Length: 340
Ligand code: 13P
Image (cartoon, rainbow, N blue to C red; front, side):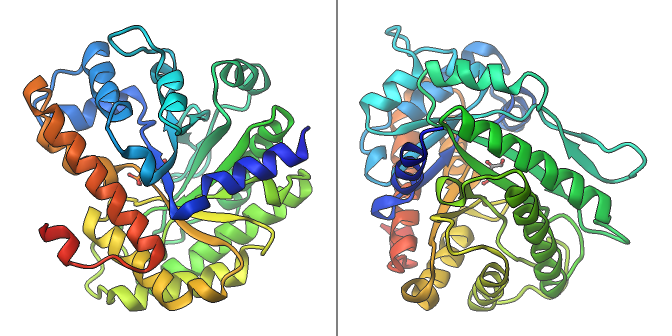
């Protein structure tokens, strides 16, 4: 394991106030998002959409790395350039989603366990040869009556740590993503509690598996009230709750925390990240960054609609959202940015 290389890559992923663009939707998820907008769900439309993203002019000014999906890392631009190479040429580090999805956890109704450890060592070798320098694995934690169970928290944390250790062995920086879902009526307080439990379990397991904390990125949810909770706290309250929770659970050795957006609107995700950085940036041990999928892509996808004529407008929207999030890392995001 080349320790220095892992440390350098992890630092590079959060340097310059940039963040990650998650464009690693599995085929079923990508198809679902296409279907809602009447876009045909074919390998070619998925390829064309990802080509739109990787060829967006100016994306690298705000995006340090892009997470690809297995199908996508094997696809090419129309001119024959593989997407991973196109990203490298644009000064964006290619990454790869390596879990094979969250499946029902046996004996645990309503809970999931993420799969993909079998054969992972060989897949990582292959992805590394294709140009990937970091990887992602997502665990999902549902909140509900009696949920999450202790066993779901432990099993998911264990899998995340096994994945992270294998990544580092292969020279890839693991992006460790335990996502506490927003679905449900739970309060902000409960989200803080469950997120804290999930993160504590994750770092216990990461330490057990001898993962180098300096050579990883944490990708957590923000602590937020459930989507159907009647009390929706202010942006500042959610920012305070999230940072308090992270300070209690995330070791200072971790170089960066890159949030997922989890179904928040693009504007709210930027505003909340901005509030955290305004209020806490100067006294935090880690960078507070972003690794959004929907909060960067959704407006662009809605503009594109599968039409060649809309490519440029969609690309402008992608750059705009990426810039808003760069500004949010600096605590300089404002409502006015959305009106320009
Ligand atoms: P969202 O930002 O849409 O939640 O996606 C992040 C992600 O990569 C999920 O694994």
